[in-house]
Image (cartoon, helix red, strand yellow):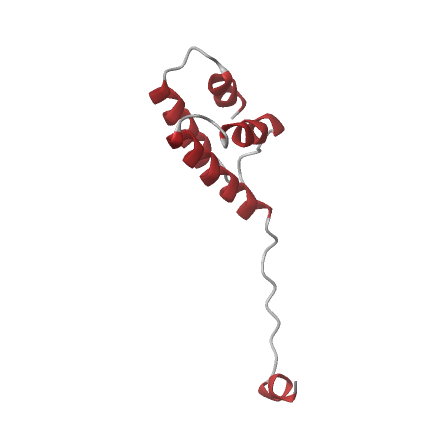
Length: 86
């Protein structure tokens, strides 16, 4: 993840290589893969990028990151009387 981030911040990549790198970064946003702070900073920086495709990938990455931060649902079982009483 860190190597991919370094490639994204490198000025030697073409626009197509930038798009491929951003799509790979979005695919790697999972709970099993640790996300360094520099990758989050790169996603935020690419939200205001000139290329519309890179902006789309940045928005997709940020939504995936927000979903990862969301706590799991807790289901509480209630009887029908408890529900209808309120």
